[in-house]
Length: 180
Image 1 (cartoon, rainbow, N blue to C red):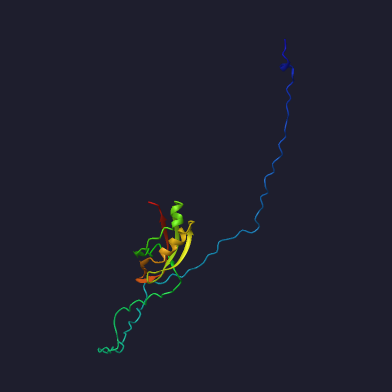
Image 2: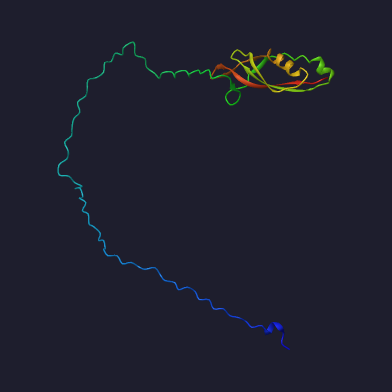
């Protein structure tokens, strides 16, 4: 018996590849010849040496130095002080040191409501160490923010310095309200 698969004829396909034509080689018409360049070679042993020139000394400077002449390296001029407003603490600017702190008064309404939390403020400490401007970054209700601002305005700092001179700085402070 012959199976059905064996009965099928096999078909063969012939695929013709396209003929490849190599690129044309062009002949050069003109052949360049190398040019000869003549370079003069200097004589390593000259016949006559160059004459030696004698230099006459110039007038000498006087031995006496006038009294108004100062010798040495001049001091560097002081750095210009530009009042560009408060500088953020960081890098060469150290945070000012607090020398007097006033504790905030806990508002009675917040105490009765058992309210606790943190008020975050950004303050400007001036060149004398006083708190000048207060900006509220995070507040609390029931008078806690106002109590924190009133207390911080009374704080006193040792001013920050830059190149030995006091500068205004921006400082972020937190005031914590916690019932005991």
